[in-house]
Length: 177
Image (cartoon, rainbow, N blue to C red; front, side):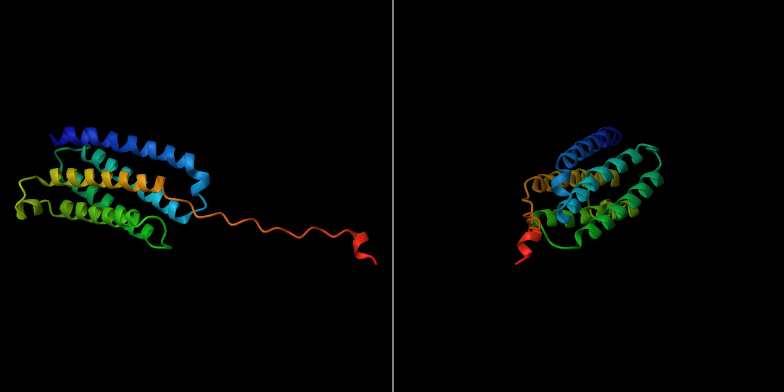
């Protein structure tokens, strides 16, 4: 069952990532002048791309626990670190978008913990395998990415300051008495 989930989830994640690239391309001129928009667009790309990559890598050797554990750990630690790095800087945009970045960083961290300790779900009394828990966490990551993308699409842009006007050149005739 999980092979079927990851077989479907990987292309869905990459399709949503491709659609996100189209959105970013259409809004590039507008978003290029806003550090908040550039940062948040990068966060959303990570929220779509890394779960797709992890899903794809879990299919490389579906019977190898080592392969999915290593790929999920590395990808989720990279994702958490990147999201934390992108979260620092001048504040801007809706608070929910910032909360989405922090929630996604936490979800990536939990993915890493479960990959490092696959017996943890059973130790916590969950009736699910580690890969099933990871599937749920990756689904939540993509959902949070969709929510942050939606917020970003409707976040107002800071006003563009007017270009400084240069004084009109004075004519030589006006300078003479």
